[in-house]
Amino acid sequence: MIRTLAITRDHQVTVNMPLEQLELSDYAWVWADFNQPTEEESRLLDSYFHFHPLAIEDCMHVLQRPKLDYYENLQFLVLHALNPVTLEAEEVDLFLGANFLVSFHHGKLEEVDEAWDRLLQHAHERTIWARGPVAAAYTVMDKLVDHYFPSLFAIEDELAELENRGGQESVEELMNQVFDLRSRLLKLRRTVVPMRDLLYRVVNSQHVQRSGEHTVYFTDIYDHLLKLTDMIEADREMTADLRDSYISLNSNRMNQIMKTLTVITTVFMPLTLIAGIYGMNFTHMPELQWKYGYGAVLLLMFVLGGCMVAWFVKRGWFK
Image 1 (tube, rainbow, N blue to C red):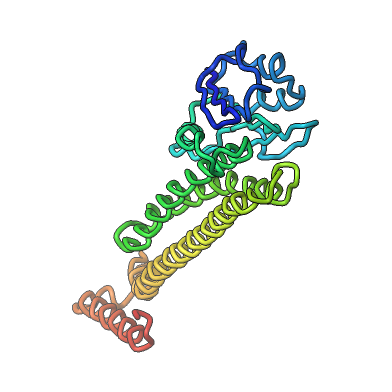
Image 2 (cartoon, rainbow, N blue to C red):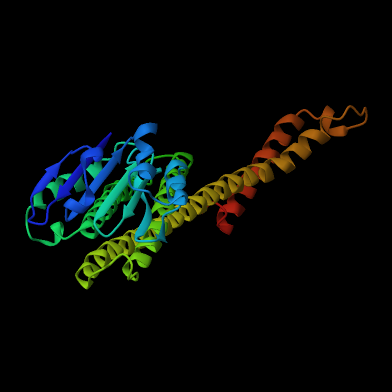
């Protein structure tokens, strides 16, 4: 599907005029959104707009890393939206010209719809939102970045909850949850960091910003991405601390178990020796004929075991 938003020079708005009937020179600027385009619609990138073949090829082959390419009278941007369920990146391509913006994406994106509605609402006004395709490109980028925050906030909430209930679950379950959070944070980082680098290029590019008034808006998006990056790194450090704490806790528990088993084994070693000696089948063993031999050996074993336990307690082995 292709939808169009055309702004006349006197700030009148024309919506969803077919591209075949749309003459770019008749309007101040135009936004054409290729939303899940068919193969036939995709050919209009070449037959109608005459974009560079390399840029068109990048649109057809997803998933490209966020980037900014310069062509004659055209800037081509590859952006990433974030799937809130899988946290995987979804590509959004922008063709930015002097009097047009073309957005291209293979899946339906709520962020682009919100940007479209925002531009449609303000397009008739003589504000920054109606001052050309650069403002439209900013709006798309701003909505894409705004939708990064809910996913990160959800992870932070889970992390806080995990930290609060740390002693109520087994270490194995806690470790699985920590590694799941780290995996999701890594997915977020793979999307946010390349977008941050792209916005740094946009902020410092004289090709994209044809007037200085747009600089502060792109800088605002860049600041949001810097904040996101810092939050992700802080959360990753927190999960690393939790992981190390759980590993230390598990190691301490294992040490306590091994110490207990060692003490028990040590106590029974001399008792096993005594039992082994009197379990031998030699004929000449005087104690075997003694009337009180059995009781005496049991008493010896009991006293010896008790003395060893008392000595271990005195040494602090049970603390």
